[in-house]
Image (cartoon, rainbow, N blue to C red; front, side, top):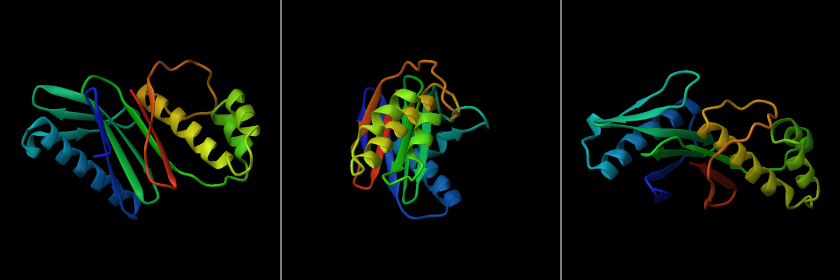
Length: 171
């Protein structure tokens, strides 16, 4: 478990695995953690996912919001018993075309703010902005796309992770 509060649980698995195996492992970990958290038999809990729709955690008497994120070496999952949730993780790294990426996906204001960072500060600032945007989109049930200024109403919370990772929870 990485974080818990207000009906939200975030769990993580650190392991360098092929993406398919990472997906299977984090889903199994979600079921196990939810069974422990909800005091239910693990067989009573399942993960439902439909292409184009946010995943859901199904259990007797309820449905919970569920979100997954993967980066090399780390997988995260967030469960929200009271509604939608989004989580995103990213490895902090220097990205050569950071300005174009930020402008096209994070918007002109974020791109401008990143341009004021020093070269040493920018990779962390970009990762923080990226994970915040991606987590918010997941929480809203929207896909990552080029910049769209439509507001997203959710609470963003940075998660504390060891370097070189950054993550954000949206609920």
